[in-house]
Image (tube, rainbow, N blue to C red; front, side):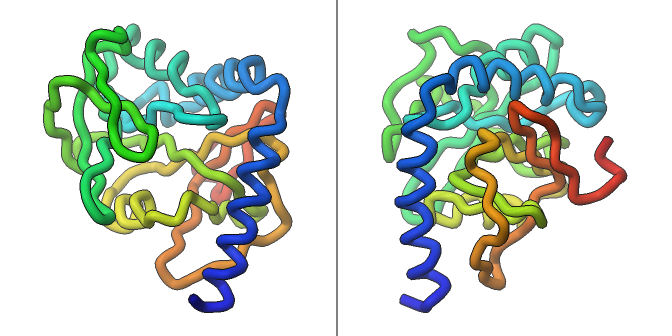
Length: 193
């Protein structure tokens, strides 16, 4: 492993523990979802890509429900084999429409393939982010690969406690356009108001 990879591995464990320790994640998640819904890029989007939460991640289900209710198409990630991230459109979050996926994820029972470029906004999970809006994920590289190839506005959702001054970076790391926390919105560019 490289020094940067070692630093990232140590930081992942620390940030996972920090996020797991938050007592009021549900209330914070509701606030984060409301702030995302207030973004012009969300309002204008006809189709979005949004992860389905696992473990102590920001609960995006209220955001998905709101998007579907507003008539937006919603795609979700489906983790496949080695560094394979596929995508599927969904019609609902009804429990009977979902089955267990890899790494503790949930996936739609019936896959309806979606492809990068078919949505304009991607909601991205993370363990940590820094002031330049670089993110630390789980280390699989799934979202790095997606963001490198998809023409989309990338919005990270995180609890404010997940912010750090600066993350270790590698050539394949991409900054996000926005990060939405319960205490406000961090912007990389003025363009994303």
